[in-house]
Image 1: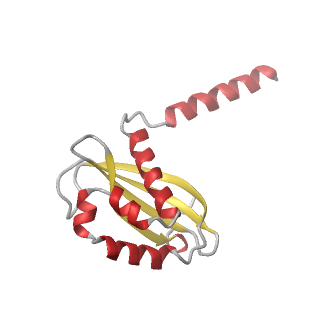
Image 2: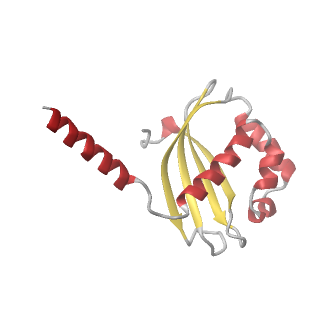
Length: 147
């Protein structure tokens, strides 16, 4: 019996290790998104805009971002939990300039609002850092891919 448990634990450990991303950018992308989302969660929309990519700042004026983010996120009561569901790399996003992108999808539960799927698209900057180039929120109840 002990041998069976050890084998099961070994298989679970090996499976978890294999499931982890082997992409060297993955950890940097996730860290950049998490740092940016921390600002958004704290209602520091101006700081989040300032830390976003130049492309984000060019497409969306700071005042417009602050107004939109405040209207959309201000009534949620804050984040209760956020779980990374997927991370998709791409070198080609429709309507965007060529570059290295990752789109991270989170399942997010709020304290005073319905759960949502959050989409954070990261762009690799010329200096190699990863910065937010896009953000979206979609009601999770309207989509079939809840966890």
